[in-house]
Length: 354
Image 1: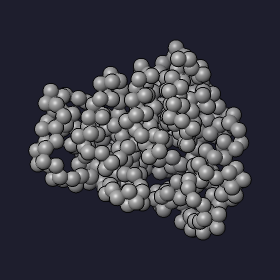
Image 2 (image 1 turned 135 degrees about the horizontal axis):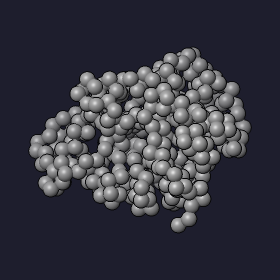
Image 3 (image 1 turned 45 degrees about the vertical axis):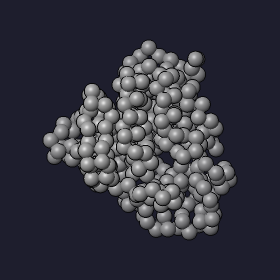
């Protein structure tokens, strides 16, 4: 299989990752070439988010593992409440062995409104900690008898008593309780897009302090900045979708949390929601809105809310990515673009860190 991205013999960029099937893909088959291209660029990890349409996580992560040799595959993320814990643990072990140890199981809280609609229990911080403990016990070959905890009650949970698997666990964390949990019980932490510099630094401190308080080495917990990369080599309508459209969609889904986390003016969010177009729109703005409609939405979002992103020339984007690491992140996801779109910034980043 050929790659459209520029291959390189330089060191793998383990501190950089990307999202496979970013946004609203036309087909899950797009992931095959994206993984080939991402590995050719030297990117260290492909993150795969689960959507209940054409992005079922077990299927697409298996594809990613099959067409790569070096790059890690991380779920970024799936939810524990959609599968029995033995199914989740078995899936992770299968991926771990399929990829020769390149798999990371990432879990997240998900969206309460969607779970309510589907008849699924809402996810709590206590459940996530309980699940993390169960996964590690099952991967160690334990037979868990009579478990009764926040995640649920099960008479017996077991995989294989011969298992001694060491599979990294990742948590998508937003609020302080989730960040503290990530520090004490997970190996990697996935932050959110459009975090200000101050928010990023605060989140890193929370995770690392929690790890230290739990008797862990803070350096053993990897904090990923999820950083939108929207360079000026992309068409203007695409840039609009990947900036205004994406942030507007986050504001649709969990605007109060975004505003509270970043210390933004809540009155701006009130005006955004009250806008007749936004209030009447059905679906995700970044997936369904036209360019003209997004141009209107852009008038509702302050420039400073869109500022935490890599924009401009490849060199400017590379410097912005590097800045995330200088601010305290251990690694950076180049968010919202396929590897072929990221090739210019990756080349510039290599020159910057050489």
